[in-house]
Image: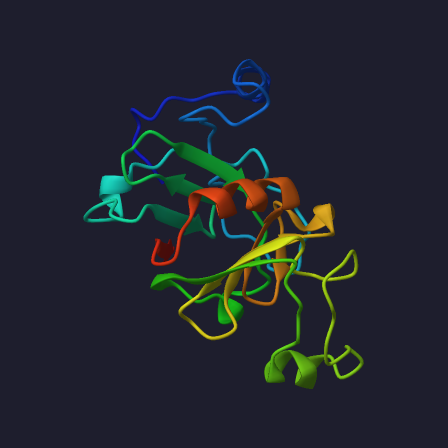
Amino acid sequence: MGNSSTPRLNRRLFLAAGTAAGGMLAAPALARVNTAGPEDPGTATRNIMGFTARRWRDHFSSLRGGAILCDTQSRCVHFWSEDQSVYRLYPSSVPMTDQMTRRGRTRVVQKVVGPSWSPTPNMRRRNPEWPAYVPPGPDNPLGTHALYLSWQYYRVHGTNDDRKIGRRASNGCIGLYNHHIEELFGYARLGTQVLLI
């Protein structure tokens, strides 16, 4: 991941940069990925400081409409605005297993404040005790905001369970802290390109 010339930043410097930027993640906010080896999907290891800086040109041919990169290895989401004036890096939750992880190109097709949630048919088969529908609110696993993707059932959304961030904890979606998805929701628009790697 990255090359040997990628700057390294320790936790203290990373937090200081975030504080200096008024509590927001600075652009770019850098840290190193732990590349010690493959991780057992069953572990609950957090990876909040495992960021790798990315360049948009390595993943997108243009920034038309803005771009969102969901990195399932380092468990973070990058956003670049079309005019390159905004770059954000957010810690995220990712799917529990590779079988639940979809990779490739998609786009934002709907933006919802206060999303409701219904488990997919596969989720209901695995977890028949789950409710068929959860209205918006504190018990909703999609949190306060959701970006619906062109892939059926896939979302970049918030979470009301902050323990999931930095972990393999979802059934396929990418989860962010509610205050981060609210910010990303403001930047993204219909048609914003999304890449999951």
